[in-house]
Length: 141
Length: 100
Image (cartoon, rainbow over all chains, first blue to last red; front, side):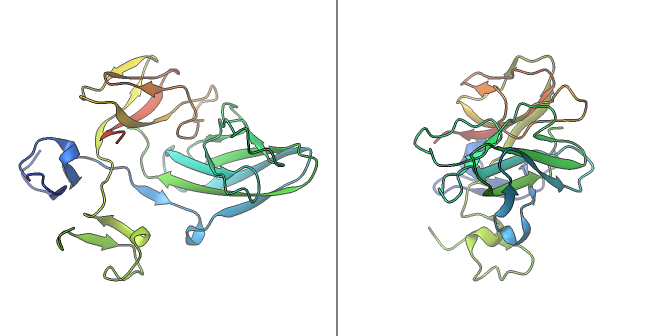
């Protein structure tokens, strides 16, 4: 690598260190970049009708399949947020909630155009569910 | 912390007074630094070469071409020697960061 860039060490660490963990920032190393979050960085909501699936679709606008971190408050109003689509819910989180199926090829996935996340509601009533996401400008290549 | 360093705010925010969450980068906060990026084919072990168990992201492909799972929605795991993927062609990021 050419001898230029920017690096900032953690307190008490020397700027000549060759240990990456000693740096807060070092332009010699890549960093994942958050490309997009929900509008106004506010959680979004989706109305999930009882007795079936509801799919959230977000066009990400990137020319590749991006990494996506997704969070959902499965039980409305619980304050308990879960990451991803393969969720082991807290056994104490017993109120009416939606479920997800993150290993289904057609229900929850990312492709080069969209993010699709599907919630299933068999709770016995309609639910309004909160979600939040980070779309990264990184594709694993 | 001593009064030195650098920070960059997001567009529309005054770097001198904005909340930390409205910064793009600040030398006050650690960042995940990428050690290695790749696609593991076939599924199995990636020797990361680090002296600790690193933080990682993985993204697994589905059977439908071009469909991938959300970060963390697969059975990949890490230890002090390897990242082990469970699905062919899983994309991965390994960071210079241990669980502290």
